Image (cartoon, rainbow, N blue to C red; front, side, top):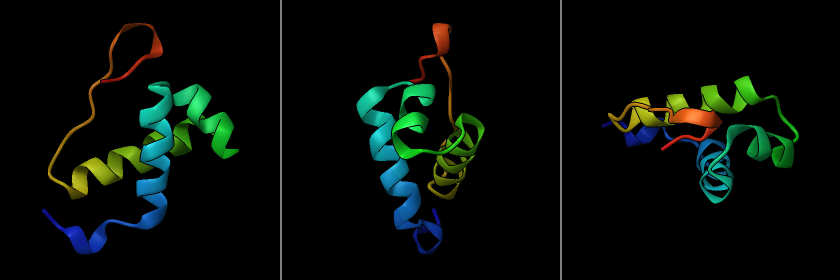
Length: 61
């Protein structure tokens, strides 16, 4: 786990994603593209030694 690489921007993006549990709606709230948000969340997960999983219907867990 590399906590030095965790940015506050990535944590804020994840917090919005966690609230919506939907990349598209979270990206819209953050005014960024869905792929950009997904990349931020994936980088955050990787820096914490985790991996992203997606569920059906565009919802992620």
